[in-house]
Each structure stands twice: as C-alpha cells, then as structure tokens.
Length: 456
Image (tube, rainbow, N blue to C red; front, side):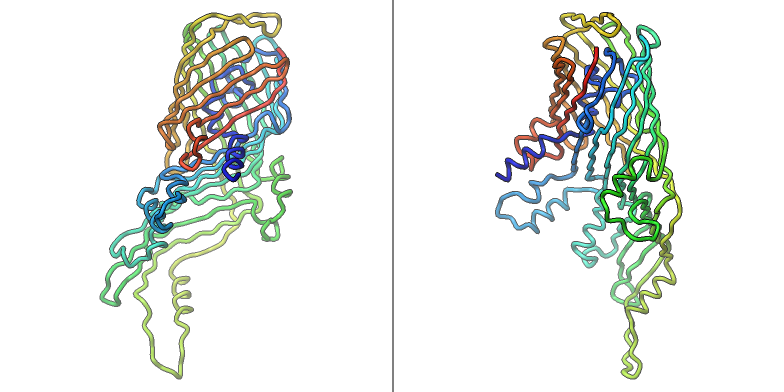
C-alpha cells in the first residue's frame, strides 16, 4: 500500500525541468509560449483552466539516491551513511521546484501577432552539499588534524514568489518568428547564503594539544519575508500566499525567444528566460559573520576563592575578535536565468491543418532533433542535453519521446503527448520512465500535464 501511494503521488505531479525538456519545441501546446515567447502559434486564442493549465513539482538529488541510504539489507544505517558521505562531493546538490499556473490566456491580435498574459506562483530551492562540514560534524575534528575545511561549500538559495507576465509573439517573415515576455515578480519569501569564504582548521600547537582556527571567515545568510514589521516570524500560510500577488518585494524580468526555419524541414528555436531580479527591502533579516579567531584551549586556574566562567570568557573573546551581526539592509536577488535551444528536422508524410483566419499550414508527421537546457545556479550551471523524436498520429494526436543526459543520470527516457479533444487541449508527459519502476533508485522523476481551451 505504501509503495502504491508513493507511486500515485509521484505520477500526478509535474516538473518544471520536465516541462523544459518535453514541452519545449513542442508547438502543439500553448505552454510552449512560457518556455519560448518566440514560439509559433497556430491557433486563434487559448484559455488556461485556472489552477490546472500548468501545475508542477520536481525533486532532484545528485551524488546518491534514497536506496543508498534506506536499502533493505543487513548493513547498519551508519555504514550506509558513511558510504554516501564517501560518494558525494561539494558540487552535488538537492533541488526542489513547484509551480502552479493560476491564470493563462492568449489571443491573436492579427495574422502575424499573438498576445498572451497570466499569473503563476513558483517555489524554487537548491542547496549544495557542504561535504567538508558534514564530515566535520559527523566525525569531529580529531581525525582531521592539519586539514582545511572551506566555508565556500555552504551555498543555498530558496524563493517563493508570484509572477505576473505579458508576452508577444510576432511573425517577422516566413522564416523568422520572434517574441518577448515582461514579468513582474512579487517575492513572498527569499532565503539565500551565497559567496561565503574562509576556512576552519585544527592543528597541533605548542600552546596546547590542538589549536583551532577560523581564518578569513566571511559568511552571510540573507532573508526576506520570514519576519513581519515587528521582527516576529510569520507563521500564517495565508500571509505568504497573499504576498505573491504584488504584495511582497517586487522585481522585473524579461524572456526573449525566436523560431527560425532554415528550410521548411529544418527549424531552430531558442530562448532566454528569467533575465531579472528582485529588490528585497521589506521584512528583511540578515546574519553576517566576519573575521579571524584562534583557540588554543582553556587555561584553568585552580583558585577556589575566585571561580571563573570559562565558556563565557571564550564567548566574549570570540565576539570581540569576530564580527557577528544582524541587519535589516535591503539587497538584490537575481533570478536563475534559463537558456534553451533546439534543432528539429521534420520528415515523412505532410499534413495540412486549418488555422486562424481560414489559413492552412503544412506539417510533417515526424521529426527528430536535440535540445539544450541550462539553468544558472550559484556554484555551477545545471545543464541538460536531450535528443527527441516526435510523431503525429493525426491532426489531433501528437507525441514526443526523449532521451536526456544531465547531472542526475545519463539514462533518462521520457514521453509526452498532446491531444485536441474538441476545443479542450490536454498535454501530459512522464520525464523518467525507468525511474517509475523503482523510485528509490531514481535521482529525479517528473510528470507534466496541463488543460487548456484552444480556439483554432
């Protein structure tokens, strides 16, 4: 029963990363415009069903999987944990993303111009694995004399925000279609710890057995939205959601994209998404640490008439030498920019489709190609390479099959379908077919669907 419930939970969710790989360059879906504002549109208008036109969830893990920690074998959990600790490195990460499309509408202004607008909410989180400090906390410093532990491995970023957007897609010529989308971000919560530096080390010393040193420490945690005007932590979910619609810290963003036909059969598409920032000035709370500190142990004084509080002395000495402070300074947070590009070659039987204004478009029933997807992240970009095959079984039924190589795996096989049922358009796709068979061994899994009313 537990395995069945887990399977159902995973297969009724979708992934933003899945959407990038499956829906990009798959023009039968209106959601393509959110991935490429320069995508071609062959319908008169579309109306997303609120809360259902695009709903997403994604959880990914690099370096190890759940089976490495919780496999049903005779090994002790401590042994499995130490095995995982030996496998990971400081560039491995855990990422989480969920997105819900609240409103999505588009309509044709004229034969060459299509307008679209809407509002969605997104939660995005990534945290890298600071292997140095995981080992330090787990084993202690005794086994690591003369080893340097780097604070730069501590890096994480999380956002919960609403996005109000409006875009335009315009046909410049028979070969070229371009587009852009303007976004207003309303951040409800932001927390990030980036660009930290400094080291910790334990060495032998003439003063004592072990000398412990913090060298050139410069660390920070910046937050907005987690406290209110009275510096009290917010514990109301309704308040967090209400701030996503122009009630939080605001920012601006831009998407740009294009579609170019070298020949009727060879097509290139590309887009840059979330070129933007958020200015955090409301309800900010930041924590900073800066300085150097060396501890050679405690020198006890055996004077019963004058007892000393040694730990209080150490704490005061630390505060005197190392700057630790809380501030409410404003700061700017950059959105994780996304880069997409794809080449597609169409072949096979041609089909003709009736489109807006009684025009007809010629299409091929089959296509092959590859696409690149990249997300700019704090330590290194998240890169994916996908090859795909598209097949149309009729004017209303279209499919796409993919193979992806990325940080999670080199054997990610996915499938998507696009159906036109009268005026109802349904899109769905499973990003990791092999991962469904045993989710405990999968580093990522994703499912994608959407419901829209499309008027040809």
